[in-house]
Image (tube, rainbow over all chains, first blue to last red):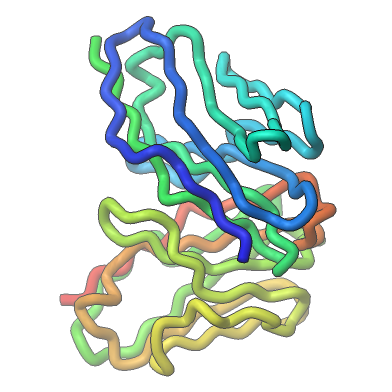
Length: 111
Length: 117
């Protein structure tokens, strides 16, 4: 069945460091891909998405490119801030009619 | 409404009592989902509605859990004879189509934090 695998956390970075959170998927066809973010004490919010191969989703300085060759959708940011500390979830639309989420990656940014 | 609304936002209940959690999705969204997030854990899928029917209820952990959706809108998740392991944040989400061609993903509610004492 469809699945999403994220790199294990927690990821701890200093402010202004470069961020990569790896996400790979297994699915039939080419599903839409998403990154969701959950800030401390808040609900999940859509961060960015890509709906077809080679699409790049971007928002708030974060980017992710849909790579069908490597079945990946890695999240990147050039310079993280303390306010980026959160849990990040990668997800895909499954043909079972629901989003399949990865296990989440906790990011902690230290000043 | 403008967003997905869940109530109550917090619920403390005694072990063995029944609880009802409510979700009001975005108007016009045909698909509605329930997830559970335990402390420090990822998202555990519970059940999914397309309209009023539930084509996938594979995630309900036991027969103490049930859910319904009426009028293609509001959904209620009921937990009977609550146990301490039921303590978690229960998240509801809705989406426009609920299919692979729906490029909007989910919109989540803020969740109901359930504590069973």
